[in-house]
Length: 439
Ligand code: ASP
Image (cartoon, rainbow, N blue to C red):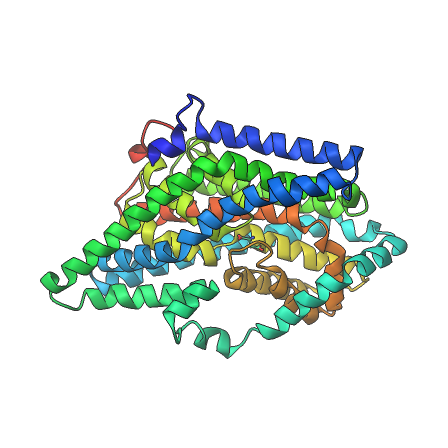
């Protein structure tokens, strides 16, 4: 698989191909959007019969293996760590890292949006127009928010009633919980009884990794298709009125990635940011094009182990949890969006209100599902808390796709760094163990 990610057989490295596909998809989408318009019959045909299906097949190949991978890698991770105290310690460190970096990210986003104040610049007429255009979308998000209200049941529901149903419904936390218990229970039965099950889990893991390799062969086509679908439909039209907002979100995301995370990589984890990014970049392109931490999990796992040399036991345990809990990019986006909409609606937040927005951004980023737009329903919940009408989300929905793609990159970069952080703190990894060859 290292080979299949690194080199796709025709001489050109796979990540180079994926990057080229990204550019080709984006540029051709923008060109047809500006020249022909998004409703042109030819553009619709290409999206319906070519770009859309190819992108979907790629996405489905990734989603197909997420649940078996989460279950087998968590169960193996826990069983492999053996001692439950060790599981607790490693889990505690991982969660500490997730929360710490997410908190830094949310605070950073808030400082940026308060400094730039992009909300003040949106004219009344544009606001009304955007609200009308996206009203329907917004109401479905508001309903989703109401259905998934944050409360005691959020925690009770983690204890899944039926792990197969959880897997079928994409309820990652339920599957993680079952995997944790399963792995812990495996350590409690005699070794010779546990052995066959461990072998099965290892085999599932290996098989899934091979399927990831197959999916990644499709990546250049899938990525081009997905990106074309987005740019051909949206072009630049929405970027104008919301330019300031988009600029602040993208700026904060990139600064977090290349400044904050780089500082953490260099001074806390002890790895050169350049080395880190050169190893993870193909996975970050996958995150960008799929907009989903969950869909990127298989590739991220491979990158952490083969690209950075993090022991599989640690990566297999930390990453599946990180892909749903550690969302630095999402918390930046949420904090900025809430404050932006407060500015648009003329709501003045006190310092206490700001602190609440940071805390809620961290909590909801932890709770958001790693799927495209996974954080939007939770974001609607924070908006209600600060007094922005839920429909206000309509203002930003039109530009969310590009923001979603970018925040997912930041989420995944944070997830992978967490594996290195935990492995280093356990004394089982350091930067000298990063394999020499770029993956
Ligand atoms: N798409 C994001 C992810 O999968 C979640 C979100 O912020 O909507 O990481």
